[in-house]
Length: 470
Length: 112
Image 1 (cartoon, rainbow over the protein chains, first blue to last red):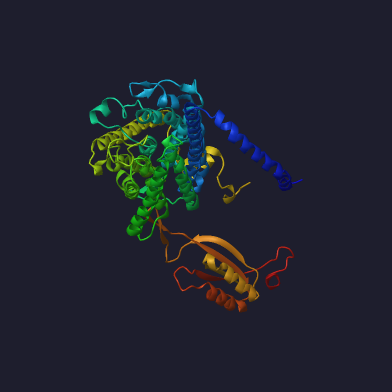
Image 2 (cartoon, each protein chain N blue to C red; image 1 turned 135 degrees about the horizontal axis):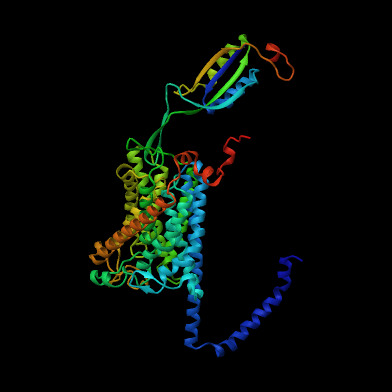
């Protein structure tokens, strides 16, 4: 008997059961209806369940961003380093999970010590459903910072050195700044700075906490590791084309998909009335960033440049990550457009002025556009004053931005932006320097030319392209 | 006996091969090669930066024919492989001293 006929045979039975239950409800339910308090309790537990579910789903969406990062990085680099980059990204998330469980979470969200650092909840001791739920959502963010660094330092960095750096970033560099901004007790959201300036630093989903930290750590890394062989000739940057634009574009779109969870999930509430606004703002900025870079490259070189345009979409997303819960749709578009200018100018600045080699544009996309995003909060935030559309929002920038006549929010955003740059650059510079002096940061010239795939992992990512010799 | 060696555009190899086959010349050797002529290379763009690809992908076609057939084969290749743009390639003609078919040991015209 198949399912359909079973259904038909039982139809009459179900109908009569339904009728009986309606009759029962009419007579019995009113008598057993809960008190107002009991109903309120049921609704509250349903709301809690929605939040738990939303954070699990959002975290899962963000998790996929690690695939996006991997594809963007391998697409924009050469075939001979593909297996190495895949392994680096893969181990970033694998180590990230463990290290964020061991210490990262504790330092970020443990009991506050002096506004600087968290000091308990290591190994998630005493965790309950709520804590595990929060950990899952925060964990997928933590490893993202290290992944940003991986792209900028691709094609010449020692694998062991990178693994050790990843542990340092997820265990300490990332969670310390995260504590300052997101723990509620950190120096950027309470205490001396906030009292003096009269506003609390606002970074909705991590333009600074995740992206700036990754971007400026990457800057420290590429300065110490040096450029790839052949990147600069007589001080002039030379193009080293990546091997697969299809992978780079697929990766970029996966990252954009991930941003639904990244920004949408950062409401941290499954019942938040502004979650859809957050997502709309996010994607308005993404489109604007890509359009701007396409236009710039078209005007500058006569041809719209694909990989820079892909960077433009990401720059729009990174820039809107801090202000997405604090600004209007129009502001989101402006923030994305300027994000596009920032990333193009940033890539050119890195190559022509700083003379640093960042194969995937990670420093410009995550560092510079991240800083722009943080400042944009201080410019475009609606604030929570009278008449603001966001007056009752649970989590937004409290102060109005420059264009609405406020200045305190902008001042604290500047302070936060500077702190994120200094902290990420200095802390990462020290860690990379120690690694360089002990085990060495860079592979040998011979190994770099042969490609890290064969030397570090003994396999080419595309074996059938190679000539096999017996 | 002559060996005709033609360096042509990769996009033209199938047309040339079909035309030669139609004219009765089915034995050919084809190799993917890289090279450049007077054209030197083409400019491409990566992340807003121009760069020159100075060795371009080409296809090398080798075919050995009798002296009488040489002009006809060269005509076919030249006619079909031409686009009248820079980068169409070149044809080289060499004398062939001897031909041996490996399977039977036949030589020269018998082996062709």
